[in-house]
Length: 193
Image (cartoon, rainbow, N blue to C red; front, side):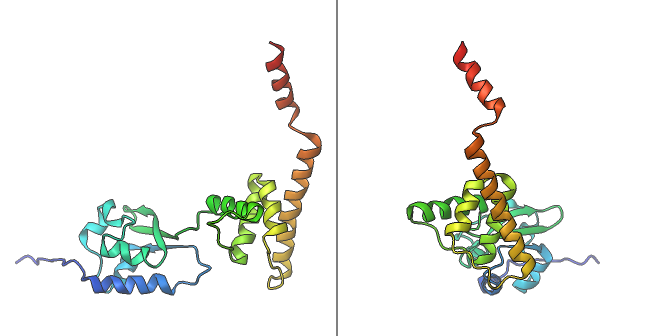
């Protein structure tokens, strides 16, 4: 005789446990990757079969009980890897590029819509700016962003200072040298015709 396994959709209350889990994560944590079995254990009743094969089940919407559980806690599904059964969640409003642009605009113009990032995020943004060539933004973040270094280790302070010096140096170099000679010759060639 074959054993029949029937799965019943977890009750809405099960997703309250998932909501509490996301609420309990430290405010400085921006991302969490969980296996679907881990999520099932958090829910307490396992995940429904549709969660293992249907991308739509993972929609960032408050119209579903599962979506509401992470959205109301300030999280969203960033990536879903159904073949390996991993879901990656990111705190809403934590997109680095958008966050940097908004905060720099806020610092320079007082534009609305930017919350003051916590110190670790600000240091991360400064490092990002130094690495990708956003030297102006990195300089503004350091000089006007109220980045507190007191609670950091000596190595962390040195890293932040190095990132700032990189941004400041490269920004000054660009200001004094202007565009690269290749860009200048291309511009001159365009006007000769």
